[in-house]
Each structure stands twice: as structure tokens, then as C-alpha cells.
Image (cartoon, helix red, strand yellow):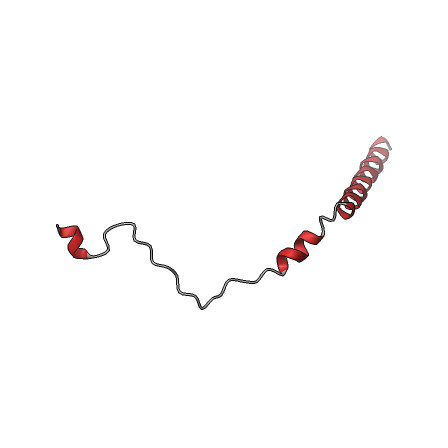
Length: 64
């Protein structure tokens, strides 16, 4: 019977903490972050990637 009382107590604490975190989030307007991020434009897929030149660009340069 003691385990049942403990389980109910822990469950109520989890529910209470969830409600408090939800209220905190609503007051600080954290929920609007996802809406703002979803409205950012996506990167254009038709853009060509820029070639990086970390080393010699031509085979003749490596033979010198």
C-alpha cells in the first residue's frame, strides 16, 4: 500500500511540474520561437556549390 501512495505522489509532482513549466514557457513567450524559425526561407536548391581550393588547382602545379 505504501508503494501506491508513493506512486500517486510522484505522479502528481510530475504533473504539477509540467504545468508550472508550461505556464513559465507561455509567460516568457518561448513557444513563438518555433513559429519564427519555421518561417525562415529555405536555402535555394538550384545554387551551385562553391569550389574550394585547399591545395594546388592544377596537376602541373603539383609536378613542379
